[in-house]
Amino acid sequence: MPEVDVKQKVLAANQAAAAALRESFRDQRTLVVNLISSPGSGKTTLLEATVARMKDRYRLGGLDGDIATERDADRLRKAGIPARQILTGGACHLDARQVDAALAEEGERLRGLDVLFIENVGNLICPTGYDLGEDFKVVLLSTAEGDDKPFKYPAIFSKAKVTVLTKVDLLPYVDFDVAAVKEQVDTLNPEGRFLEVSARTGDGMDGWCGLLEDALSRKRAS
Image 1 (cartoon, one colour):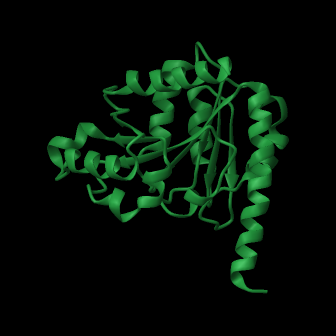
Image 2 (image 1 turned 30 degrees about the vertical axis):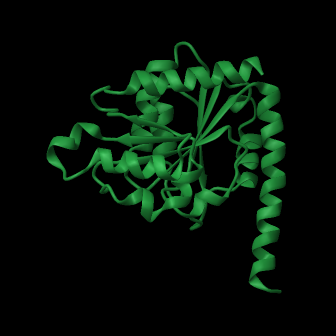
């Protein structure tokens, strides 16, 4: 069977599973956010800081994709929310069927949430093409990675509703042109949001949490 046919069948199966997930999340009025970045960009650290600010007012949960270990899910559970690790066995992304299976196995612990965070496998390429039933994608870029990434990996920066520049507390110590990155992102995705955040110092966290709260309010009202 030609390789393109296999890929099309895989993507079609994923789209069907994602559509079913999206309907379920809509019924539960759960905001679902799919976080995508390179390894080490600060996804889990951002979520820990988000949980600390929001867990007393909202019911939060997490799904964490990785090739091995329970470390990311352990960190979210330690932060105070239910979390499930999805081990891909070497795959470079999550797919909707894995998300569906993980939610089914967790049962009530991850049902009826206000916000579900899906922390994808660390990769700027493979996760981009897989719909997980989310409301929107968020791409993270850390100041330690270099300011050339949006044009090098245009697909995710074009699709993500929100770009979060992380580790801005390191700006005095790294060679990173924030204005150049903003220009690249605006070129690729003029309608997208751009936030600058340091989960360590708290800079920008009000804007990030406010964005989530606004998105949740809109979903509840729809």
